[in-house]
Structure formats: structure tokens, C-alpha cells
Length: 283
Image (cartoon, rainbow, N blue to C red; front, side, top):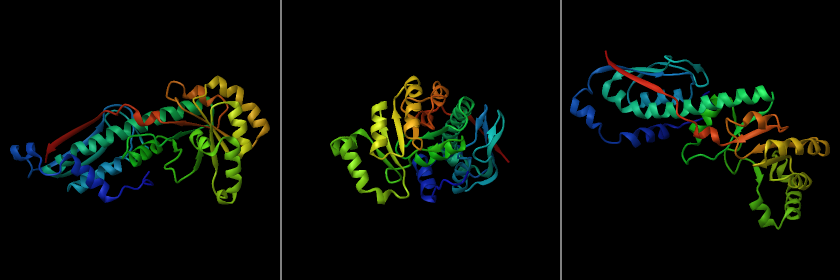
């Protein structure tokens, strides 16, 4: 699970955001020079995520990592996610930065794993795809956490895929404008899929006629999708179908069974944090 890249500057920026100058408590209590051990422990069932980056936070603060549970591993209450030793000042500087990272990432990973299991139980083969709709600055963390839980990225940036929204269609003057432009640039799409958003069966049929490889239904109900998918597949057997908009843990299984190929969701980025306990003891 180290396929998501975090540069050293990013790790250092996280540390500097929380402790840029001095840890006043550590200084006043005069405990900084002592050797200590620090452990991050799951207080409930979870999926480990960004543990490697938490370890790097500790290392950048001068600690020596003794144990780390790999991202993607399921953990139970009491399991150690990360353990390190070193100068107490460095460990205390890393403490909250690493804990906050782990609580967010493990919370997202656990929610993702639960959704993936529910979707696969309802419709094996349907994928869970996560969007780029999250707070700025969280992309790498959110990506690694959702990958750890078994999901895949939908679109990491606007330069990655061709995704035509109604806003683009409006600028082209409607469906004929979309079809004409896509036909004109078809040679440039030799290695790309063209995705077009739709809000109805008529939209989807027009999108397929305009050159879509994939139709992404936005905020359609599972009942609508059950009615729309069969005629679309009959007329366009190679067309792939996505459901997006309003998909969450409570309805993902219903959407998965509606006939689509994948679910596109933003809700996992806003999962409740995991409960991670931290202990520090003198050596």
C-alpha cells in the first residue's frame, strides 16, 4: 500500500503546521531529554491506513520506529498500529500529527471496506469509485485511505479523464455540439475513455449517440436505474454505466443491484474518524 507518493516536504509541512517553533508544555515540564516509547493503538475494529506516513512523521521528528501495521490490514481493538522509541521531545512533537492522520485515514479506510463488502454482497463485480470531492490538501491521504479499504479512484484530477458535464454541453450549444466536437477530436482519444454525465434515459441515449464510452448517471434513483440500464445495454452493449450522486453506506447495496457497473461516491471522505489511543512511557 505504498503506491501513493508523499514527498518529504509534505511530511515536514504537516509537522510544522502543529509544532513550528516550540512545544511549550514539554519545555516547561523539562521532559524533553528523556528516552521514551510511544504506541498508537486501535481502540476498536478498523482498517489500517497511512500508517507508513505516520511512521515517517515520527522519523522526521527523530524517533525510531519499532513496529508498523501495513495499510490495508484489518485490526482489532488493542492492536498496535505504530510503535516507536526515542527522545521524548521528538516523540511528543510527532504525537498529535500522527494520531490525527491515523484517525482520519483509518476511519475512511474502515468505512470504505464496509461499503465495498456490502456492494460485493449485493452485486459481485460492481466497483466502488471515490471522487476528488474533498477538502483541498487531502487528496493523497484520501486516496491512500480509500485504496486501503478496497475502493478505486474515479478521477484524480481534470487532466486524467474526459468527463463531459451539462455545463460543458451548454457551452457547446447542446447535444449536437457535443457530438460534433467529440467526432472532431476522436483521434486524440485513442487511449482515453469518454464519460458523459446524464440525468435521464433520454440523456443517456443521446450521450451514447454522441460518442460516450461511459455514461455517468447523476442522482438517479435505484428504481430509475433498474428501468434504464436494460434498454441501454441492449442498444449499446459496450457502454459502461456508473451511478453517482447521493450514494452512501445506507443505499450503496441498493444502487449496486440496479444494473450499473460501478458506484461513484464522495461520502467515504467524510467518514467518522477511527478511535486511536496513544501511550507514552519512559524507558
